Length: 453
Image (cartoon, rainbow, N blue to C red):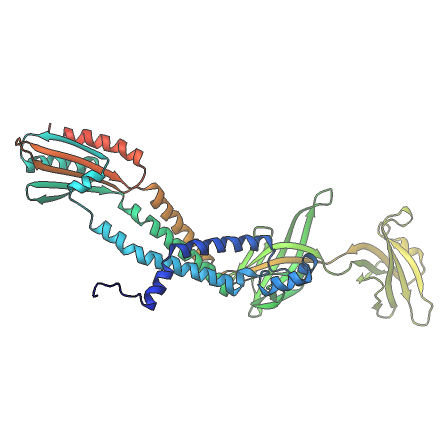
């Protein structure tokens, strides 16, 4: 038979799949569940840390599922793309019908429409249709919106509406979600996040990412000029900051001291102050001078590491005591001179002239211990972040349109009654916030009825 339903084509079935609300719900649930999983499982940590937490079989399984870097995994990217396509298809499928309703509203108040409207009022007036149509049109224009006038045989219809934009709120919200997901996909594919420790005075050009499994080239150099730590009297850290320089093309192009929540940004890459620590062991600072007080040099003695002094011998710091014989911090020094037996003696930090008692050509004074620090930086690049911000702004606009605006419509029908008078029907409806519209409709009733009296 010619009227038999035609079997849907492959394209139709694919289209029906992507406009399915069930698909959207399932995808959203999976995205929410995996996002919770990604919050519970700490992302992008070194493998050694995961081995401390999970059994070997669990580590292998989770690693194969990319659960340690799930936001950059292909399956998570697939979910983002699937939901974006699904939402886009749903919007494309439904938007033309909504647009048709908005562009071609029912401007005539016929019987079926009148029965569907709960807000309606009726009265009669003496006069002509055109006379009252003009008066009621003026009343609607003054208190609601300028009406569209339609003459249909022996009837005249007035139609006015406000808040049409609210019909587009859901589509603006859909668009915002699509844009946010596109931003997330861009950030997922082209962005990175990693952590790097930079000792004072040193520089890096690469950052380990994905739990240290891959090195990301920055395209420039970041140098830690210095690091400083401020503590409370209890010893707890109060504030810490890093003096960073960006070197690009062989010259310093940017320098900034960063603290927590005040990062450095260059070429779309952000450097956040994340941690700190001691780089290597401490060194003893020892000032060397001649017996007449002339400074010779400053020594940085690592534990038991020999440091030569030209024309004198080799000096080593072999022991340290925080409170040497009640005199405070002190360093034990060993001096080895060519052809002579080595000598060992203590120099006290609080007594710089103590070593003068030793009959030697050079005098050593202990200036205290010094340790080089490293700054821990979190390095991130997310080229999709501005797209996400755009989507967020659109979402706010869409939600305001969808939830705080209302499409309100009012009809007036005028017809000649059997008694020769003009029969008037006033009716209205609102897409949401019905209680507020009822109050407005009551005022409209009063104003329209009073028109021309």
